[in-house]
Image 1 (cartoon, rainbow, N blue to C red):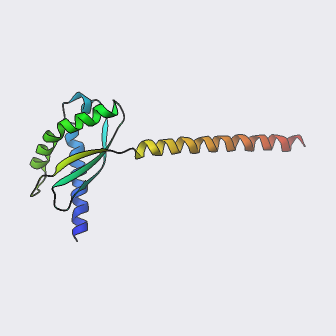
Image 2: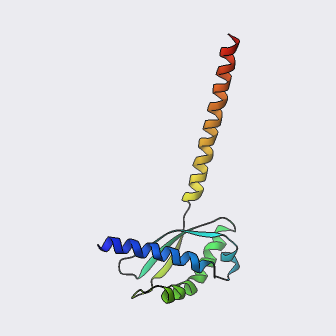
Image 3: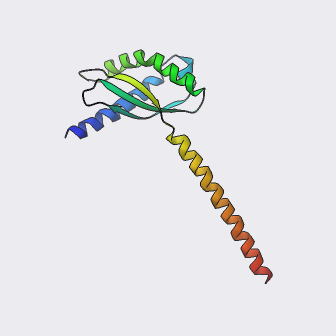
Length: 128
């Protein structure tokens, strides 16, 4: 039962952080098109890791912007969520989207080269 509650807290935390990030006025955050990919709140509600990915901007500057906005974000979480304790937020860059895009590009290259090989084999068999 406790794991189910923990999962709901994590999901709700992730949704709220995503909405709050739209309100942050720091240009390092507002101009970076940040998406929240996950959240892990500890069972005692003292700490939370928020996983994010950004499409634009310098990675280091985006992280600094998020860290400097953490106080505002935490205050908004306290107002919006009914938790006994508002967790201290740590932002962690999630590179899985970039990694997935890289793997996809590699697979496309393999598929493309296979199609070229198949086309060459077919033209050789037509000549016979």
